[in-house]
Length: 244
Image 1 (cartoon, rainbow, N blue to C red):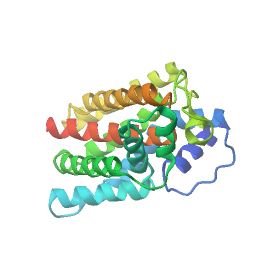
Image 2: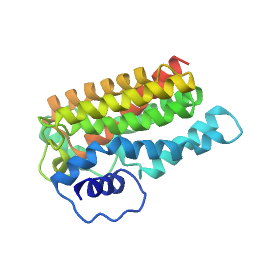
Image 3: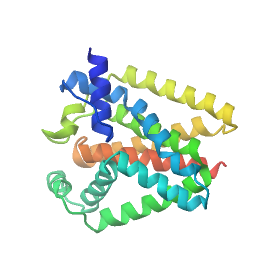
Image 4: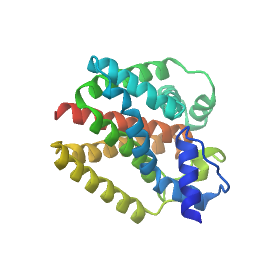
């Protein structure tokens, strides 16, 4: 079935969890991007384990983020660094895309990575496990919207081209409403009423970056998708930390 194939594709692409992917095409990719928040939920729950350890909140937060990076192969962080180098170069789209394809990381990428991880760590130390799970889900929800119909690929080939435009906007909206609703229920249960607000804020931050990337590059790439995940994740953690 396409649904199960899509889930396997999502797990295999977005995590290190071992799965067998038998079918890879745009239909399956579309289902995978719809199911991406489910993978985010699993990643968030597992990544919370270090937060249960006794010790300072900052150390636990650093370990949790390190575990999350391992579980995702660091691909989203790599995408964030590459996009920062490409956009920071100020070059036209074609040259910026070439910079993003290089394996090395330039100064813009290094600064962006350090700043992002510092903010995430400091925010998570205050916000706690519920915020991390919400952030991981919202980061993958950003992928659902980034792959909505009408969002083009910046170049042929690669993951961006495979998933671009594969999700109906109506479906993306329904998934978003479901995520916000679940966050609201969890927020009431945990006395963290800001969780659904954090979801909206995180998605909004990612969509702002998506708009800028489309304007500068012409569409999405795998690096853009990774950067959107980290942007939404960071925004959710910051909102949760700021609202207690």
